[in-house]
Image (cartoon, rainbow, N blue to C red; front, side, top):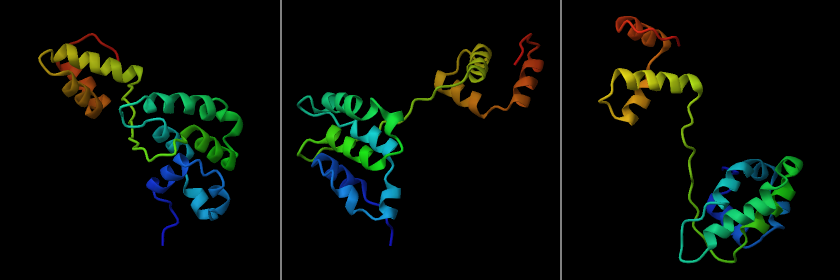
Length: 151
């Protein structure tokens, strides 16, 4: 049997401001709680008719994120702060907001070079090509096109 708590139950507890539940969890259940991920979920409520989504972001920033580095080792306190920030006394729907791709300088240079070589390709295709092209292949491509470019 898994000692992981379903996200739905965690969200319900946070929405109900159930601060005391942390003491009732087993050690394995406590280990399964990922505070950083919960932070992202609790701050991203699906858009509704009211300002609940905006309030969620403000609450997380004010109560939870403000002193993250000072309290990150104190899991019970983190749980309590999540409950304070996420309390709404109603069931809310949360959505995961993924990370945007942020290429490093070398990747940007590779993308720019490929874009110059293939101006008719779409940008997403160029980005994909730059991700899957190895440095060796790129050097060969530069040599084949007689370009004066360093990687």
